[in-house]
Amino acid sequence: MKKSTLLWALVLSLPMSILAQQKSIKALVGGTLIDGFGSDPIKNSVIIIEGERIKEVGTVETLPVPEGAEIISTEGMSVLPGLWDMHVHTMINGHANYTYWDKTYPPLFENVIMPSSAHQLLMAGVTSARDLGAPLKESISVRDRINNGEIPGATLYVSGPFIQHKPYPGTEDFRWGVNSPEDGKRKIKKLADAGVDVIKLIDHDQMTMEELRAVVDEAHKHNLKVVAHGHRPEEIRRGLQVGVDCFEHTGLSSAPKYPDDVMEMIKERTAQMNKGPLFWCPTVEGLYNYEYTRDNPEKLDNDSWHLGLPDSVITDIKNSFKHPDRLPYFQLTPSRRPTLQTKIQQLLDAGVVLLVGTDSGIPMKFHSQSTWNELDVWVNEFGIDPMYAIRAATYWPALWTGVADEVGTITPGKYADIIAVDGDVLRYISLLQDVDMVIKHGKQYK
Ligand SMILES: [Zn+2]
Image (cartoon, rainbow, N blue to C red; front, side, top):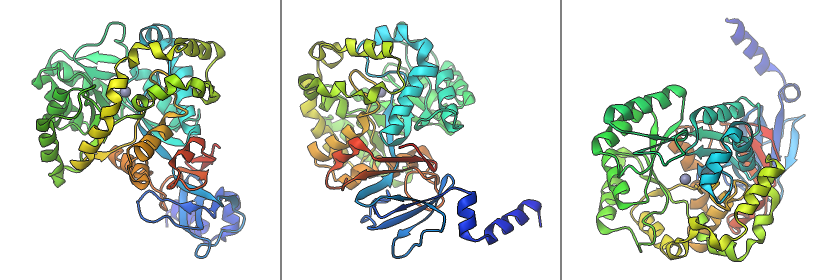
C-alpha cells in the first residue's frame, strides 16, 4: 500500500466528529434549495460542505448533520448556486467617459480597479464571471491572485485584450488589431500561451473572412472558445459562418428586430444538435434600465460600488455622471429599449440558450448591482421563467465554460459556491439584490 493510500484509509476510518474538527465542515440547514438543474426546489434542505467542496446534499429528514459541524441556518431562505455573470468588464467601474478613463487609470488596473470589481461581484453573490476585454498581464494577474486566495473576488475567466480589426486610438493595451491571417494566428497563440480562458472578438465584420477564420480556428486549436459581438447583422452572419461559440449583446441598435435571413441562419445552427446549444448573452439591463436610472438617480448613491476604491476614484466616477441625461453613451438607448424584448423573444423562439451577462462596468453600471438587475429585467419585464433565468446564471455558464464538473450546480463533489437570500427568489427574483450569504470554495465571505 502506498503511503498516501494508507493515510487516506486512516482518515476515512476516523469518526465524522473528529473529521469535522480537523477539516472545516459546514452544514447549511433548513432553506429551500434551488440546485441549478431546474427541477422543483428541495424543501428543508441540508448541504454539507467539507473544506472547499460540497460533500452531501439532502433534507433535514434524510441527512444528519455531522457532529462538530458549523451549522449555518438557512431557514426562510432560498439557497442556490453562486451566480455567474458572463459579461463583465473589471477594468471599468461605471465611469461615463471612456477616453478619460483609458488615459487616467491603467496604472491602477492591476492592484486597485480590477480587484475592486471582482470583490464587488463576489459580495453581490456572483462567484464566477467572464471578464471580456482588459490588458493581458493585469487580467492574468488578478485572476490568479483570486484563485490563489491572495485577494477576495469572483472566480474570473478572462479574455485579456479584445481581438478586432483595428484598435481605437489610445486603447492598444487592451485591444489588439489583426492585419492578416498570420497576424491573427500569432496573436491568438500569444494569448493562449499567456493562459487566457477565452477569446473576445469584436468588429469582426471589418476583418477579412480569412483573418476571421484564422483567428477562430487558431483559438479552437488551443481549446479556447470564442465570444463574439452580435451588434451588427454582419457580425452575426460571419460569426455563425466561422463557428463562434457565443454571441454578446442584443444588437442591431434601434432596428426593430433581427432580419429574416439572420433568423434563418440562427435556426439552421440551432437545428444541429451535434454542435451543442447556440449560446447568447443578451446583456439587456444596462439599456433597459437607463431611462429609469436617469430619472431616478438615487440608486447611484448606493455605496456598494465604493468597495475597494479610493475616495478620489469614487469622486471622479460620481462627477462623470452628474448629468445622466447628457451621456453620449446612452443617446440612442431610449430608441433601443422597446426593441429589446422582441429581439430576446426572437432568440428564444429560435432555440438559442440565453446566458446571464450584463456588461457590468459601463457608465452608471456597477459590479455590485448589475447581475440581479439582468435577472430582474428578464423575469419581471420580459416574462421569462425565473428558473430559466437562474439556470442561465448558474448551470449553463459553467457548462459553456467547460467547468460543469466543478461548479454551476449544488452537487456533491463540486466546489461549494453557494449563496442564500431571505425569501422566495422564484416568486420575487429581485430579492437577489441583497444576498444574505455568500460562500465560495467553502469559504464564507458574507
Ligand atoms: Zn462588453
